[in-house]
Picture (tube, rainbow, N blue to C red):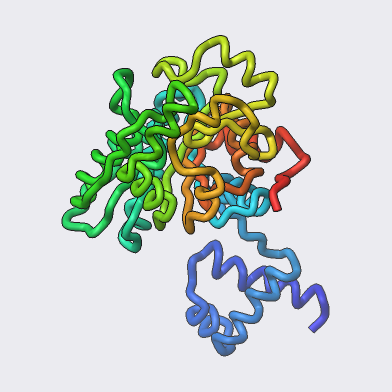
Length: 322
């Protein structure tokens, strides 16, 4: 068979299969050959470029972004949430939180202890979390969680609300996220109850955390961070915080007085948790998220589409964690 005749035959078979909707068996019967021959002809049509399969679906671009994030930042899994143009920050946060909640609800069946940090994104995640019944899961706060402001987003409250959704149990860390002084922190850590809880929290099977930006921080609103300290954080190179600990662009904890007053698990402990899920949204947090990813704290990341694009395209230097 010469090349023109072969190509004509391939085009004919491809049209019958892809455009007319005939099965391979139907085409074989029509042409008078066996079905395996039709299968080989269709494969040959793809190899020669006669047939190009293009998947038209909005999720394709999301999958590509996910694969790029996974490769670039050594993530086990990235989940990119598509958002519509014009969606406000609060709506984007809720959509990301809902996606994360559904993903977490599947993972949580196989774990015994779950750790949770604090913040508005995690508040929405807990709100969106579907009800489970009679699970044997204990939920623990990863950072202190008492205070008079914004109680609903404290780690203790989130641990309690999530445990109710799971039909499980929870523990409370009776300490603030950031103590007023280092001396007060040391006194609180001498409590056997607080010490035991932090030890257990550092050994959870799975942790859910957010990422904060010190210059647009809920910490100011909650009274943990004074406005005067924000300028100091800039000078020390802080680009974000994870579980109330401020980090630089490499993801390393900065040598800053505020970090010495945090009551929660250490970042070294966070790195040792088998599965850490980061749930974040907002392009304003891109630099902070990149720092956390560079530090290698997350195994999984749930993020909105625009922020994912920023993480991929804004800094071509790549991740710098080992």
